[in-house]
View 1 (cartoon, rainbow, N blue to C red):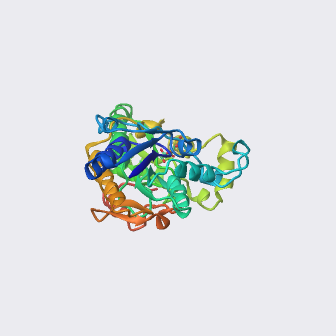
View 2 (view 1 turned 90 degrees about the horizontal axis):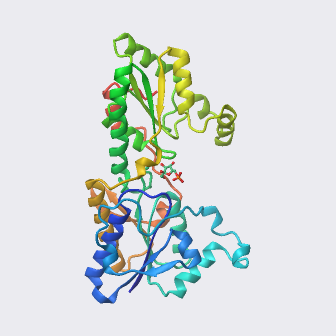
View 3 (view 1 turned 60 degrees about the vertical axis):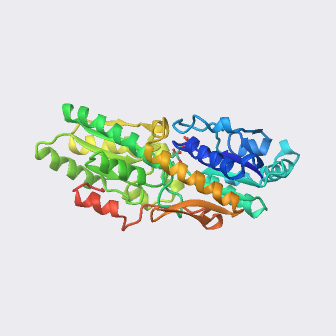
Length: 358
Ligand code: F6P
């Protein structure tokens, strides 16, 4: 059995724990009858043939290590089928298929998020035996209740909000903590609730800045001049919700903003007179050692993936559904994302706690 592994897209905590889960379980199942190969920097390594044989020692001592020992890169899906002059007119897909066949791999284990899964599905449709694992701090992969990386990022974003809380209280300021999450609000919602934010703004619920200011003024009148807003990097207001994405981005660029955070701060100062500061933890949310939860989840997913390889059950992605590890057809997962639904329990919790959702 010849298995190749790659990690693709933005990194997150738990990638090495998952690689270890797959590797150690494969050696346990197959003993000397398995060769594992590591592909460098995601699909880039498969395109350029940057591939090396691994051995059991590569999977030791990495359970708690952040990042990915294989490296990663972003290779946009839309470029996969374009003829490339540097490959004599062949596409990146052609190059990946050639390398897969050249090495005579039996299957490819792919660790990635949304973009990665589109390409994984493309490879599967062209005859590659694929087993994939869901990683991302955004928790937005369709078909799984949880991705690894998410809980570690919640821990970090929560810690940021906790730290901001004390300085915001001392100064009686409003603080906006901009939380990652791409186009979805899972990370902001969880970190906002666990950090005790007063306002949580997520892309799924376009906000009205007047409503936000009302909350801040009311708090001030109640003797609480400080407030914490957890704002998703993808959040937008009700006016922007009526615009097409291109128009929205153009308007923001004109005003010198990329995310809504700076504009919200300016509007709050103008409308309430309360001094407002911004904190953007950014990629810190993807960094450092995985939390114990993510170590367990990634190990569970990794060993399950090894079982799928042993059963030659391909074209699937590992998932957690109702607390059970299972798998979904790749074709069902590719190209979809999981938004925070209107009836999400956590939205109801936030409302019950008096947190404004804008
Ligand atoms: O998808 C994970 C993520 O961290 C998002 O939350 C964020 O929008 C994006 O990646 C940042 O991407 P990059 O690392 O390419 O700046």
